[in-house]
Image (cartoon, rainbow, N blue to C red; front, side, top):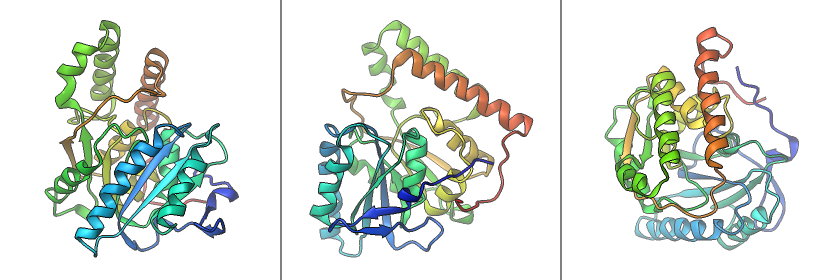
Length: 291
């Protein structure tokens, strides 16, 4: 089973007045309708655009429907820039009931950062959203519809994955032959080793019910780029229904993905996922709490 360690400093967040407060737990009862978890590593420049769009949408939605409640959790994944400071300005503007910043002691990787955010969330549904704002935030409504269409949810568990598969032809036309080859190779490995039936496992826009989030992320081992694949592998093992929903997506400059080496790392991780579950080195059991 994965070792779910949390540093003492990561158990708190600063409220709008700069005072420490204890973070809640995924195993508490939900008190918000929607939690948005934003993993951020050196995102001081790109984060404001995403936050402005997301909070603009969420505030407008709350005006239209006063019963709608939300929170945005920015997880600073050990950044070397001013990511936490930039995010905290939104906490001061909107209040710490709506915007919270978790600053990790050291870099864990995107999957590790999202898990820390999810484990401190209060929402009935939890949305993963990238800090670059590549996906248009109002598309969360498409994911909500996709999630609702999966009902009845077994044990209240379901996942809706944003997908860029419908944009594949257009992206191939803009990519080099080498990057296209790497992409197809990765898709083949995902299908062959781990996940069947999902065309785009890597889109960072995913909506999970609270129960699905706690079940999958408490079993997650991979903390870097290929974590999405293990997440969906776990979901399919537990027979959690998954919807794949087309979303609007625009490539934003400043990606942390280094084409060749990142794909190589992901390929290695895919092989490890398959072999370690196959040999019993990794096991899937019922949800357990973080130490």
